[in-house]
Image (cartoon, rainbow, N blue to C red):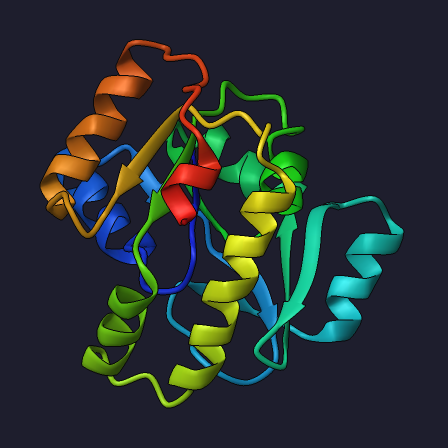
Length: 190
């Protein structure tokens, strides 16, 4: 499953609720090289990420907040082989599309919240880089508008739903083998 959304949209909170409701869900910890948060990542070096990239071992790689991040095929395969349902957190549509190339039935969930909610949640959780997260919220909005036709299995307003309601909607979509929702991205982000 792919959870896409701006900072503060609830990717961590919804993932926690998913794993509470169904233990087979597990956060896919992306590779990370650089400063910032360490929770939820497998720490490595830029050289290691580069080596995996040259060997064709990456599905996606990006840089943000002064760090390098990567989704490696081997890490994803290990979760699937262990019978887990990987939950990937994404902040770029191109990354969500790249990760979906891994041979698995993916549901793609767009978590959204207004700018003031991102800012409030970022302050509330003690982020030291609130301005950077606000900037990324704007980048995410532009990313969505540039990819309006991108298919999403589910679109959830996390400012309107509790984490439990969001997680249950995702589980229902996964159980139903849901197909893409045709809700207007422009209406959502305006």
